[in-house]
Amino acid sequence: MLTLCVDIGGTKIAVGLADAAGRLAWSGVRPTPPHGDAEQVWAVVAALIAEALDFAGGAVDGVGIGSGGPVDLHAGTVSPINIGGWRRFPLRDKVAQAVPGVPVRLAGDGVCMALGEHWVGIGQGADFLLGMVVSTGVGGGLVLDGAPYDGRTGNAGHVGHVVVEPDGQRCACGGRGCVETVASGPSLVRWARAQGWSAPPGAAAKELADAALAGDAVAEQAFRRGAHALARMIASVAAVCDLDLVVVGGGVAKSGDLLFTPLREALTDFARLDFLAGLRVEPAQLGGEAGLIGAARLITGTAQRKP
Image (cartoon, rainbow, N blue to C red; front, top):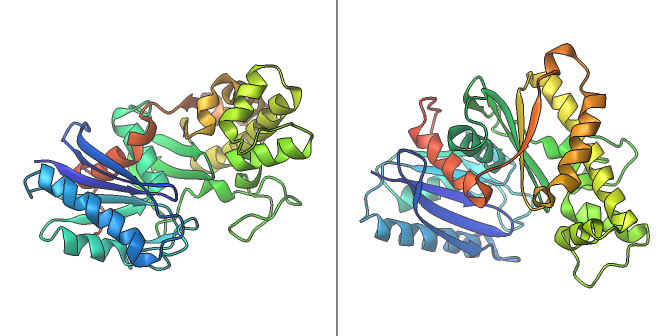
């Protein structure tokens, strides 16, 4: 039987059906309503769930949900920073009403990304793993001792809000100098513009990467600056959690060596403890499917959590 999986973010909502080996038999994606209220956003989720159930003949063995956070696992609610219409939205109960009679489990989207890569991606065999998505924000999730680690409330792994510049920019979370304010795609572009980069209208991280590959010095420096901020954060989290692997996905990670070469170089300077000598940083393998596959693993995995 297939597992229904849901992945909710600020730009897109995805629903899929995964088999026991972590392969997607069906998936559907729709944009997240940019200014939708709670029910408008839920209507997109509900429509995709209905399509999935129709494909599956109405029978699934459970539903795993990954959502942008903060999440509250105890209450089953979500308050994604980048979905303004959802504040303490009862997502788990709404999904349970739409798919009655089967277990429904919720986790942060960063945890699901990490869990997907650990299950069938680049993270196979690495039991102490940080999964990161570097895109319009910087998200993350932890797999520790082979199992997803949620923390006290479900928000462990929010590495985008590790402070790397104490006197830096204000962050959407309300803090200052979070790594997200330096290394996210919009932050790279904003810094490059301030340094004189002649950006085309609507330029994003892809256009910045194209400019860097063409030899633009400011664009290259933007990626180095972001990579160094990520390295400072990774070194701190790795020391706390005794990691053996960091997997980096998302739109900014698609820049390849522009990001990974300075990131690995900087990490050798920041992560000097002996037990971190074997720490690896690798690009994600599963792309946009990682969150869905990891959400399915919430149901199929051996480490079952409370619903």
